Image 1 (cartoon, rainbow, N blue to C red):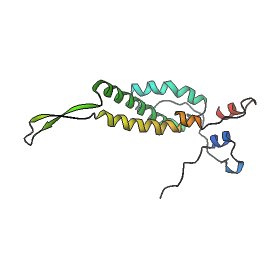
Image 2 (cartoon, one colour; image 1 turned 135 degrees about the vertical axis):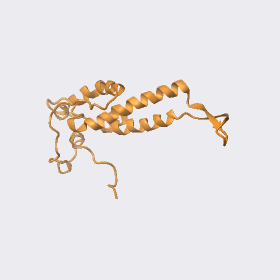
Image 3 (cartoon, rainbow, N blue to C red; image 1 turned 90 degrees about the vertical axis):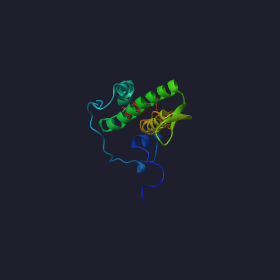
Image 4 (cartoon, one colour; image 1 turned 180 degrees about the horizontal axis):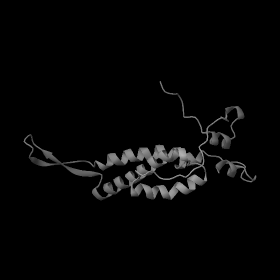
Length: 160
């Protein structure tokens, strides 16, 4: 049986939110600083997405060498979502599907849901799921409270 309840908050968020000291994992492993390069399997469209946000996310400490695959999956999902949205925009949400008789001859057409909508829905779900892990959705950013911006080394020290 899986864990119950919401996923635990990352340690960085616990510190930013001002959680009690006994609830903060001080022994959490930290990834080594290293080059963060996109995987070879990313398509050209996904690479464009990668280069759009990889720099700022790396500077904020959100994207680390351990997060490359998850971020690459997000980039790939965004690229697939864009492609599916283009097809739906060009073809429409409702399209004609051929109807065949038992001999395999086309006897007419029926109106039905565009198959690209399924790809769009799947990519949307992946974009939301992976984007939330990197704080890339407005609701996830709204939950962040960065206090002490007036004090030197406060939030900037935690995010860098």
